[in-house]
Image (cartoon, rainbow, N blue to C red; front, top):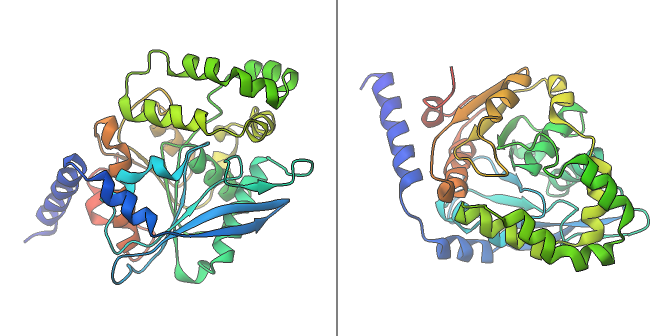
Length: 311
Protein backbone atom coordinates (compact mmCIF):
# COMPACT_ATOMS: atom_id res chain seq x y z
CA UNK A 1 0.00 0.00 0.00
CA UNK A 2 1.48 3.39 -0.95
CA UNK A 3 1.77 6.01 1.85
CA UNK A 4 -0.85 8.38 0.41
CA UNK A 5 -3.44 5.62 0.29
CA UNK A 6 -2.62 4.60 3.85
CA UNK A 7 -3.07 8.20 5.00
CA UNK A 8 -6.42 8.46 3.21
CA UNK A 9 -7.64 5.34 4.98
CA UNK A 10 -6.45 6.64 8.35
CA UNK A 11 -8.24 9.94 7.77
CA UNK A 12 -11.43 8.17 6.71
CA UNK A 13 -11.27 6.01 9.83
CA UNK A 14 -10.90 9.10 12.02
CA UNK A 15 -13.92 10.75 10.41
CA UNK A 16 -15.96 7.59 10.87
CA UNK A 17 -15.04 7.50 14.56
CA UNK A 18 -15.90 11.18 14.98
CA UNK A 19 -19.32 10.67 13.37
CA UNK A 20 -20.16 7.40 15.13
CA UNK A 21 -22.31 7.51 18.28
CA UNK A 22 -20.58 6.99 21.63
CA UNK A 23 -22.02 5.91 24.96
CA UNK A 24 -21.65 8.78 27.48
CA UNK A 25 -22.08 6.28 30.30
CA UNK A 26 -18.76 4.72 29.29
CA UNK A 27 -16.99 8.06 29.69
CA UNK A 28 -18.71 8.74 32.99
CA UNK A 29 -17.62 5.32 34.26
CA UNK A 30 -14.08 5.93 33.12
CA UNK A 31 -13.93 9.33 34.79
CA UNK A 32 -15.45 7.79 37.90
CA UNK A 33 -12.24 5.79 38.31
CA UNK A 34 -10.20 8.99 38.60
CA UNK A 35 -7.96 9.62 41.60
CA UNK A 36 -8.44 13.17 42.90
CA UNK A 37 -5.50 15.28 44.08
CA UNK A 38 -5.36 18.79 45.48
CA UNK A 39 -2.21 20.28 43.97
CA UNK A 40 -0.55 23.09 45.98
CA UNK A 41 -0.46 26.42 44.14
CA UNK A 42 -0.16 30.08 45.08
CA UNK A 43 -2.60 30.89 47.93
CA UNK A 44 -4.14 27.42 48.02
CA UNK A 45 -4.69 24.40 45.81
CA UNK A 46 -6.32 23.32 42.55
CA UNK A 47 -8.01 20.02 41.81
CA UNK A 48 -6.53 17.47 39.38
CA UNK A 49 -8.24 14.22 38.38
CA UNK A 50 -5.93 11.40 37.35
CA UNK A 51 -7.87 9.22 34.93
CA UNK A 52 -5.87 6.01 34.50
CA UNK A 53 -5.44 4.14 31.27
CA UNK A 54 -7.44 0.96 30.80
CA UNK A 55 -4.83 -1.75 30.38
CA UNK A 56 -1.36 -0.80 29.25
CA UNK A 57 -0.91 2.97 28.93
CA UNK A 58 0.12 4.70 25.71
CA UNK A 59 3.61 6.18 25.60
CA UNK A 60 2.63 9.70 26.59
CA UNK A 61 0.19 10.94 29.26
CA UNK A 62 -2.26 13.74 28.53
CA UNK A 63 -2.58 16.88 30.63
CA UNK A 64 -6.06 18.24 29.89
CA UNK A 65 -7.01 21.84 30.79
CA UNK A 66 -10.70 22.51 30.21
CA UNK A 67 -12.59 25.75 29.57
CA UNK A 68 -13.71 28.53 31.90
CA UNK A 69 -15.90 27.26 34.73
CA UNK A 70 -16.50 23.85 33.17
CA UNK A 71 -17.17 20.86 35.39
CA UNK A 72 -15.71 17.38 34.78
CA UNK A 73 -19.14 15.89 34.19
CA UNK A 74 -19.33 18.05 31.05
CA UNK A 75 -16.93 15.70 29.24
CA UNK A 76 -18.37 12.16 29.19
CA UNK A 77 -18.10 11.99 25.38
CA UNK A 78 -14.46 13.10 25.57
CA UNK A 79 -13.62 10.14 27.78
CA UNK A 80 -15.93 7.74 25.93
CA UNK A 81 -14.23 8.45 22.60
CA UNK A 82 -10.70 8.38 23.95
CA UNK A 83 -8.60 5.29 23.31
CA UNK A 84 -8.58 3.09 26.43
CA UNK A 85 -4.77 3.23 26.68
CA UNK A 86 -4.76 7.03 27.12
CA UNK A 87 -3.84 8.26 30.59
CA UNK A 88 -5.24 11.70 31.48
CA UNK A 89 -4.49 14.31 34.15
CA UNK A 90 -7.58 16.54 34.07
CA UNK A 91 -6.59 19.93 35.53
CA UNK A 92 -9.23 22.23 37.03
CA UNK A 93 -8.13 25.87 36.75
CA UNK A 94 -8.45 28.14 39.76
CA UNK A 95 -11.66 30.00 38.80
CA UNK A 96 -13.58 26.76 39.28
CA UNK A 97 -15.42 25.78 42.44
CA UNK A 98 -13.04 22.88 43.08
CA UNK A 99 -10.09 25.17 43.91
CA UNK A 100 -9.37 26.04 47.54
CA UNK A 101 -7.96 29.56 47.64
CA UNK A 102 -7.24 32.31 50.13
CA UNK A 103 -9.82 34.91 49.20
CA UNK A 104 -7.64 37.80 50.35
CA UNK A 105 -4.40 36.89 48.62
CA UNK A 106 -5.21 34.69 45.60
CA UNK A 107 -4.12 36.04 42.22
CA UNK A 108 -6.14 35.50 39.06
CA UNK A 109 -3.65 36.86 36.55
CA UNK A 110 -3.06 34.90 33.36
CA UNK A 111 0.53 34.35 34.52
CA UNK A 112 -0.80 32.66 37.65
CA UNK A 113 -3.20 30.43 35.71
CA UNK A 114 -0.23 29.29 33.60
CA UNK A 115 2.02 28.73 36.61
CA UNK A 116 -0.72 26.51 38.09
CA UNK A 117 -0.56 24.26 35.01
CA UNK A 118 3.19 23.93 35.37
CA UNK A 119 2.72 23.15 39.05
CA UNK A 120 0.42 20.26 38.12
CA UNK A 121 2.93 18.89 35.58
CA UNK A 122 5.69 19.08 38.19
CA UNK A 123 3.54 17.63 40.99
CA UNK A 124 2.97 14.43 39.02
CA UNK A 125 6.56 14.43 37.62
CA UNK A 126 5.18 14.32 34.09
CA UNK A 127 7.92 16.33 32.37
CA UNK A 128 10.15 13.25 32.11
CA UNK A 129 7.29 11.36 30.43
CA UNK A 130 6.96 13.76 27.47
CA UNK A 131 3.29 14.66 28.12
CA UNK A 132 0.79 15.99 25.59
CA UNK A 133 -0.65 19.26 26.89
CA UNK A 134 -4.24 19.74 25.73
CA UNK A 135 -6.48 22.74 26.27
CA UNK A 136 -9.94 23.76 25.20
CA UNK A 137 -11.27 27.33 24.98
CA UNK A 138 -10.02 29.16 28.10
CA UNK A 139 -7.68 26.28 28.90
CA UNK A 140 -6.10 26.72 25.46
CA UNK A 141 -5.72 30.45 26.11
CA UNK A 142 -3.91 29.76 29.39
CA UNK A 143 -1.56 27.35 27.63
CA UNK A 144 -0.75 29.78 24.82
CA UNK A 145 -0.11 32.55 27.33
CA UNK A 146 2.11 30.29 29.41
CA UNK A 147 4.14 29.29 26.37
CA UNK A 148 4.54 32.93 25.34
CA UNK A 149 5.90 33.91 28.77
CA UNK A 150 8.11 30.86 29.29
CA UNK A 151 5.93 29.70 32.20
CA UNK A 152 4.94 26.39 30.60
CA UNK A 153 7.53 24.01 29.19
CA UNK A 154 5.86 21.13 27.36
CA UNK A 155 6.83 20.12 23.82
CA UNK A 156 3.55 18.70 22.46
CA UNK A 157 0.60 21.09 22.58
CA UNK A 158 -2.95 20.84 21.21
CA UNK A 159 -5.31 23.80 21.58
CA UNK A 160 -8.97 23.19 20.78
CA UNK A 161 -10.97 26.34 19.99
CA UNK A 162 -8.66 28.78 21.82
CA UNK A 163 -10.32 31.72 23.54
CA UNK A 164 -8.96 34.96 22.06
CA UNK A 165 -10.42 37.14 24.84
CA UNK A 166 -13.14 36.92 27.46
CA UNK A 167 -16.57 36.55 25.91
CA UNK A 168 -18.17 39.23 28.12
CA UNK A 169 -17.38 42.76 26.82
CA UNK A 170 -14.86 44.75 28.84
CA UNK A 171 -17.29 47.56 29.62
CA UNK A 172 -19.70 45.05 31.18
CA UNK A 173 -16.93 43.57 33.32
CA UNK A 174 -15.80 47.03 34.44
CA UNK A 175 -19.28 48.16 35.41
CA UNK A 176 -20.63 44.97 36.94
CA UNK A 177 -17.37 43.60 38.33
CA UNK A 178 -16.31 46.81 40.04
CA UNK A 179 -19.80 47.79 41.24
CA UNK A 180 -21.55 44.66 42.49
CA UNK A 181 -20.21 42.43 45.28
CA UNK A 182 -20.31 38.64 44.79
CA UNK A 183 -23.47 38.32 46.89
CA UNK A 184 -25.36 40.56 44.46
CA UNK A 185 -23.88 38.74 41.48
CA UNK A 186 -25.16 35.47 42.97
CA UNK A 187 -28.64 36.97 43.17
CA UNK A 188 -28.36 38.09 39.54
CA UNK A 189 -27.18 34.69 38.33
CA UNK A 190 -30.62 33.48 37.09
CA UNK A 191 -30.96 36.66 35.02
CA UNK A 192 -27.45 36.27 33.63
CA UNK A 193 -28.23 32.64 32.81
CA UNK A 194 -31.31 33.61 30.78
CA UNK A 195 -29.36 36.28 28.88
CA UNK A 196 -26.50 33.94 28.01
CA UNK A 197 -28.74 31.08 26.88
CA UNK A 198 -31.23 33.21 24.96
CA UNK A 199 -31.31 32.09 21.33
CA UNK A 200 -28.55 29.52 21.81
CA UNK A 201 -29.65 26.58 19.68
CA UNK A 202 -26.72 24.15 20.01
CA UNK A 203 -28.03 21.61 22.57
CA UNK A 204 -24.75 20.27 23.94
CA UNK A 205 -23.05 23.64 24.35
CA UNK A 206 -26.27 25.14 25.73
CA UNK A 207 -26.42 22.45 28.43
CA UNK A 208 -22.74 22.95 29.22
CA UNK A 209 -23.17 26.73 29.47
CA UNK A 210 -26.11 26.30 31.85
CA UNK A 211 -24.07 23.94 34.06
CA UNK A 212 -21.13 26.33 34.07
CA UNK A 213 -23.29 29.23 35.28
CA UNK A 214 -25.13 27.09 37.82
CA UNK A 215 -21.84 25.96 39.38
CA UNK A 216 -20.09 29.34 39.30
CA UNK A 217 -18.33 30.54 42.45
CA UNK A 218 -18.97 34.20 41.83
CA UNK A 219 -16.17 35.77 43.83
CA UNK A 220 -13.64 33.80 41.78
CA UNK A 221 -15.34 34.68 38.50
CA UNK A 222 -15.50 38.34 39.44
CA UNK A 223 -11.83 38.52 40.42
CA UNK A 224 -10.69 36.53 37.39
CA UNK A 225 -12.78 38.58 34.94
CA UNK A 226 -11.42 41.85 36.31
CA UNK A 227 -7.86 40.52 36.11
CA UNK A 228 -8.22 39.18 32.55
CA UNK A 229 -10.56 41.66 30.87
CA UNK A 230 -7.75 43.32 28.90
CA UNK A 231 -5.99 40.08 27.95
CA UNK A 232 -5.92 39.28 24.23
CA UNK A 233 -4.41 36.17 22.67
CA UNK A 234 -3.18 38.11 19.65
CA UNK A 235 -1.02 40.28 21.92
CA UNK A 236 1.04 37.28 23.03
CA UNK A 237 0.80 34.79 20.15
CA UNK A 238 3.89 35.98 18.29
CA UNK A 239 6.05 35.18 21.35
CA UNK A 240 5.22 31.45 21.19
CA UNK A 241 8.24 29.78 19.63
CA UNK A 242 7.14 26.15 19.54
CA UNK A 243 4.70 24.20 17.41
CA UNK A 244 1.07 24.43 18.51
CA UNK A 245 -1.72 22.45 16.86
CA UNK A 246 -4.90 24.56 16.79
CA UNK A 247 -7.87 22.24 16.26
CA UNK A 248 -11.49 23.07 15.43
CA UNK A 249 -14.42 20.90 14.47
CA UNK A 250 -17.63 22.83 15.07
CA UNK A 251 -19.15 26.25 15.61
CA UNK A 252 -21.27 27.70 18.40
CA UNK A 253 -21.76 30.99 20.23
CA UNK A 254 -18.60 30.62 22.31
CA UNK A 255 -16.43 28.88 19.70
CA UNK A 256 -16.46 30.86 16.47
CA UNK A 257 -14.96 28.58 13.83
CA UNK A 258 -13.97 31.55 11.65
CA UNK A 259 -11.53 32.75 14.33
CA UNK A 260 -9.26 29.74 14.69
CA UNK A 261 -7.40 29.90 11.36
CA UNK A 262 -6.33 33.41 12.40
CA UNK A 263 -5.17 32.11 15.78
CA UNK A 264 -3.04 29.44 14.12
CA UNK A 265 -1.65 32.01 11.68
CA UNK A 266 -0.70 34.35 14.55
CA UNK A 267 1.38 31.61 16.17
CA UNK A 268 4.81 31.45 14.44
CA UNK A 269 4.68 27.63 14.45
CA UNK A 270 0.91 27.26 14.48
CA UNK A 271 -0.69 24.34 12.64
CA UNK A 272 -4.40 24.64 11.92
CA UNK A 273 -6.41 21.41 11.88
CA UNK A 274 -10.05 21.50 10.79
CA UNK A 275 -12.14 18.32 11.14
CA UNK A 276 -15.81 19.29 10.60
CA UNK A 277 -18.31 17.63 12.95
CA UNK A 278 -21.69 18.48 14.39
CA UNK A 279 -21.42 20.52 17.59
CA UNK A 280 -22.84 17.59 19.55
CA UNK A 281 -19.68 15.65 18.60
CA UNK A 282 -17.20 18.38 19.60
CA UNK A 283 -15.94 16.69 22.76
CA UNK A 284 -16.01 13.30 21.07
CA UNK A 285 -13.69 14.63 18.37
CA UNK A 286 -11.41 16.04 21.05
CA UNK A 287 -11.09 12.61 22.65
CA UNK A 288 -10.25 10.93 19.35
CA UNK A 289 -7.68 13.51 18.26
CA UNK A 290 -6.07 13.64 21.70
CA UNK A 291 -5.62 9.85 21.65
CA UNK A 292 -3.83 10.08 18.30
CA UNK A 293 -1.32 12.53 19.75
CA UNK A 294 -0.83 10.50 22.93
CA UNK A 295 0.07 7.43 20.87
CA UNK A 296 2.36 9.45 18.55
CA UNK A 297 6.09 9.44 19.20
CA UNK A 298 7.04 13.09 18.74
CA UNK A 299 5.73 16.65 18.29
CA UNK A 300 4.90 16.23 14.60
CA UNK A 301 1.36 15.80 13.32
CA UNK A 302 0.08 12.21 13.62
CA UNK A 303 -0.63 10.64 10.20
CA UNK A 304 -4.39 10.33 10.77
CA UNK A 305 -4.56 14.05 11.61
CA UNK A 306 -2.24 15.23 8.85
CA UNK A 307 -4.90 14.91 6.17
CA UNK A 308 -6.94 17.64 7.95
CA UNK A 309 -4.14 20.20 8.25
CA UNK A 310 -5.01 23.42 6.39
CA UNK A 311 -2.48 23.99 3.65
